[in-house]
Length: 414
Image 1 (cartoon, rainbow, N blue to C red):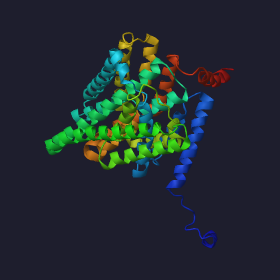
Image 2 (image 1 turned 45 degrees about the horizontal axis):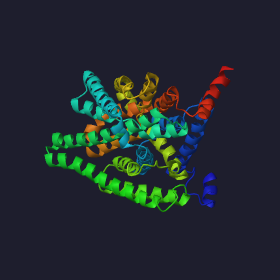
Image 3 (image 1 turned 45 degrees about the vertical axis):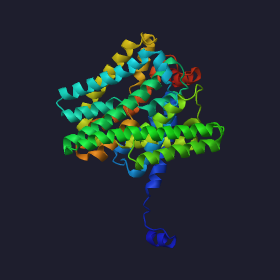
Image 4 (image 1 turned 60 degrees about the vertical axis):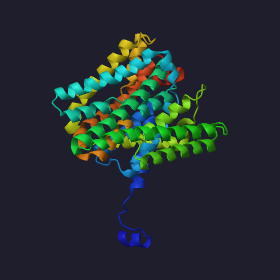
């Protein structure tokens, strides 16, 4: 009888089968609600809720990265990295060489520590190198989102942004060198091994310079706070991103370098509409759900313990480098501790690098994937909380936000 009614109502099937758009909308609603609950009930960053929804979907076998969801991740990351890069002043590195040394030290020591621990566990050299390369990178998406949400400002916040931008740059370049080495190791193709990294870096710089020039030209003629200007900026970023994709350039380097070039061609700071308006905010929410959904139960079973060892080595090495150099760079030890905590997250940037590795060398990537996905799973929830703690320890969380974050704790205690 129900089938007859369905036919009368011109329903295609009974019971109705929801499509992908239905589940995407449901995940978006759940992410927004749980993110707001996380903030109001526990004083946590909203992205903890977004990531929790994604992890539940992934562990239930409902996640995964498709071409359409990969585009969402790329675009959301492009917006966040463009904003991040536009806050990096290179003149600060010249004025404070200790900051540049801190960046080099935390990236290098983190790389060596991860590689040493994974080799001690007896992982193959190539797998240990790949994990160390990806593990060098802190999550620009997480620190940008948390810093914006808690309205953080100060020396530690600015250093966090600079260090994250620099180690993202280092990780992407090291990743391309790794892919080139694999071309040589697997196929003996030394021409491709050399030319591909050079093409990716050189081409990405050119596209980034063009994007920066176009944005600067628009900024001289339009008010960037205007909604139409925000849409125009979003369109330019999308255009640069799609150009990078069909030219096989880095979708991470292009927006990051464009932001850096834009910031350093002018003395005045750039102020953007938050995540380029509502559309950008939706993309960011979806990105964290998708990244969490990429984690699978099999990955955790195969690589979970190794990932914990990797993350422990990474945190200790990066933290020690930052804190040892903190006094020389002009920070108190408390601020150094806060800065070290903010470099903990691994999220969307690492996932994109992993997906690129899968596209280039699928068989090799299958050995790396369980460890890296497990590391992402463990830091998806803990990373944003540690960033918030780090900014709070450094005394750079906005006072109003800090009082709101402490209110739920006082209510529970009462």
